[in-house]
Image (cartoon, rainbow, N blue to C red; front, side, top):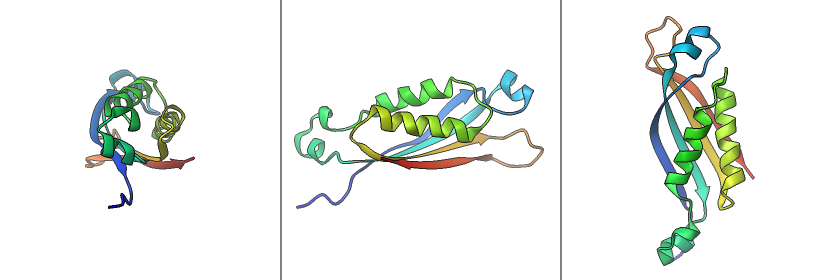
Length: 122
């Protein structure tokens, strides 16, 4: 058998953070949902059951948590920082997609969330 492709997912991470253009958003904060998709060749890990040949979900989560703790005006900026730091830290990752959604944004609309998605590759 040949492994055709491998991806790693972190779905629906929920983090409370202080991002936004409005002053109130930086005081009160908001809930965010983050989804991460990593293109990474972990076929060797699949064959050997060895963590050294894959990307630790816990390490990716810790990186996301650290970046979400840095206040920013724009979600675009936060998503870019997360994606670029994933590529910097994890050599096995060839591309990364990050979606970052702000729940119930303060814009006077009946809306569950709004956000951005960015994909970076080496």
